[in-house]
Length: 596
Ligand code: M6R
Image (cartoon, rainbow, N blue to C red):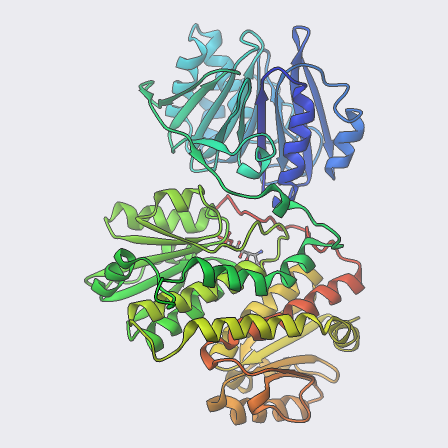
């Protein structure tokens, strides 16, 4: 979703802004802009479409002079993608970029901004004019910032520049991610550390309802009441190399193929000196003390939560349930007496997840974060944090982070039970090897995608038990990247309705990895076949049939979701490739969904 970057220093600001914005592209956007200060005025450039348009428009940044500036990639919410609606927005004296949603935009407009000729349809432009208004009434900039914070409702990360203080950037935050990057002779701000990582790995966190005044040598952070807060910077250990595609045509393909190494990294990070895999004792004890585990997440992370629920119940013997974050917030279930909450989020910034998180934090319950992003809001604010160690995941479609989530959840469940019955280290290593083998069969998936999915408008994934959860995840992947309408169904539920959708040639992909449901799912395959479906079955070797198109080497039954999803990743990738889709940046989607 929208991205922010800001720079104040001695070098050409536009080069750093454009470089920073290019690192935010993966989040999804439909327009981009930068503003710099040069020779007593703002130099504003905005374009719709890809960042390369902005790079061209600024002649690679050369046309925007100056050593201070702010930039933005916009993912439209209020107002269509257009040059006018793109950020930065200018008032008379201020320039502003905004991520988030101002919920009381209409009230603000009515109360304070009558008669203003707005140039855009955005809520963000109202903020710059609100600032102008308070300053024009005699407030200094800092007082006006405190004043707008008191007035604005909703989520906002703001980057602000002032024509009359052209050596200063202002950063303001509530509910939307924003960090300050600390450099030598320069400072930056960004909605994502990736935007600043080439320049610095030291960051200051700004909490909700705080703001910062940033010059090239100083960073001062304040509460919304104006009290200065002393903070220490933290260091991030993300490798900027991770953010490169290398020889791969798409990040998605690179990330699919990184899954074996991600599992091996998790094994390394969670290995104890005695050779077993365990999570931290304190976290384990907190889970043991709880009477029920509530796992909360969105999208792919929610599908990992569904598998996690089974791990906690079957491996650890603990009551557990999984919830979609936005639904949990809207319709919170009656909680058990001693609940503990696990929040799963690759980015650690997803707004729906955070809204549920803030609720349970206010209720005083303990939380554990599973995230891939050290330094993210979830990582910083949860009582405990466990890292996924998947490396930067850039493609919008989550692949390697999902496998990492499953691997880590299995380690958590086994740790809670002190389980040595399963040699988890060996079983996870085996799963990594099996995935490596699957990655060697790309030609086969390419042909299967062509045979089963090309020129199809609908597709169904089916499975039972853990395979049903894999079906949900596989269908999410296929729909988001290839735009083929795909649903995941419990195989046993088909006959209760969805089977009506099966026609001659409808692709049905069946996942069969559990011995206890093998025969049942195979009967469901017969049901759809007899109604004309074109069935592609994926099974584990031990329970395979000669009719299965994809047979995966055996892994421990609990770990089958880690391997059975990989053919689905490849089928999705090749289906999208054959259809000519924008694989890493699918339409309408954003990597980090920072609005509710
Ligand atoms: O960063 P998160 O794990 O919180 O993201 C949650 C979902 O937005 C995300 O998994 C989304 O469903 C992916 N695009 C799926 O590929």
